[in-house]
Length: 307
Image: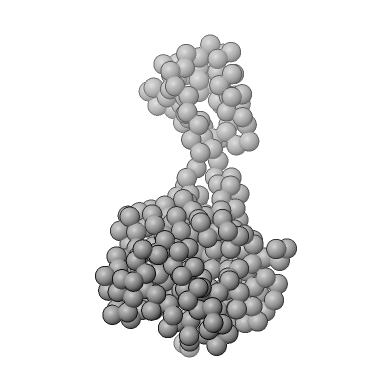
């Protein structure tokens, strides 16, 4: 797909009383990506999603899905916003059949096949005849995702899909999202958990108090924070001189090691020069910035790393 899966320009939502929940957001979500929409609770993520889905009206700006006005392309979108809601006394199959019947565009003659396919896709075939109330939290979330896949979807929008899940349920949903993306569906995942986004997303956008403060591929955003090398040595003075002479940034020394930011310099070049200078090296480590490091650098504070 040439056009971005999601593209917004100046998307804004101002509520009565003057509160600005979303302030001029310019999203660019590549087709085929798993895009992590990251930010603390209250940063404007859900409000942005509701505007994309036509659930609330923007105060300003525009939004497009696959190059078309958002409202015109909603048939290509599956969405899960603020958790699933199903009938507890009905089975997984029966719940999905009821949802499918409520869709005027759905083909009734293929409903059973499509429901079975959706349950199979999320790994719930063996639990299809179980009542919803007997489902674990992970199974309930997978059923909710199955409900978004009853018809062919090019874009899946999931708002906090692992919220409230135990570690096993989280792994199940994370693996499912990767599988769906591998089939060619673009997945837009809202989350406030750094660890989850880092493990499953190819691209991210960072929200802070209603504004998009950073956006890009994972590698692009990591490059915003410099890689460091740490040298374990007894020759601290000599090692410090080598790193300083190389004009590396933020050179720091301690009784048994020296570290510095290397920017675009190859780590092997640094180690070679240390060796040629006669520095006795006990250990040499390349420390690449984590997602948390990136966010601290961009926003001055971190988000939740684990649940």
